[in-house]
Length: 375
Image (cartoon, rainbow, N blue to C red; front, side, top):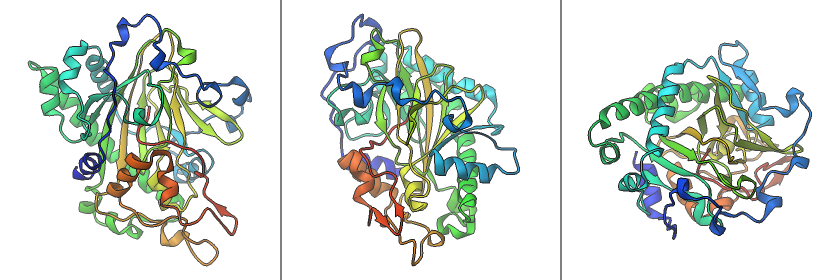
């Protein structure tokens, strides 16, 4: 998928830090110590103790006839939801988690054979957003775009094929689910597949771009002063996250502060990305999220980042704009937007905004939000 590769190649990210062997660190290094607690660490006073559904990320059964309406409400009020009865076999979810666990359990010197280059998008490395923060994050990742054959041969010279097969099967299955969720989200806005020019034919819809991100959050000796993944939004239409049975993912909701997204056996987390935020003209906000770490167990997750074809212009849909609802954003391709993200980071969305407040409609993302990865 050239759009991702081209965008990152044009805007290389140089992280001037060696990749650590987290297992060998008995104390939290200064370079990983986050001191701005008010902005970056959990504050119990900011989290609602209310156990009502209003303070919990919505869980939606995709077999529910009202799934589209429920998804629409979740996107508008949260920017994130969890899905069950999504059709992805539990065995496949277990398999992809196993690939991640096996990969990150390799010795450091072995993982570094598949290191991501500064102008590359695939391979092993620290979070790309690291370059925008003064402190490093207690995590490691592996990005996959297209078949992972070359990198997996470097990691597992003898039995790379079985790992490749699982990744390719997961990619194929996730793509179908992403298309289904995309259509449900569009439907909740009164938009049909035929209303989306690039998606009106099956052949075009299959040209959608995607990337897979394997994440590891090792056991941390001082989790209260560390950050697994700093607050950010995703550049995608939507991101589908499979998380292990360890808590860590949090989303920010106005009036509630940081809310934990608890692991749900067999469930998948779906969050709205910046491009869908633009397409919906700000009705469905891209959600700010982060990942915390712990001192007990290592946490793993797999993110499937789904976006449009590389050359397609994304803008507020015609059905959502009018004399009293002007477009809030200009047209942008995913390729261009990824370049903007790599350059401007937390100001990327505002950089394509035409206006912040018109006739009562405002940009809910008008704050210091970051971008690129998901935990």
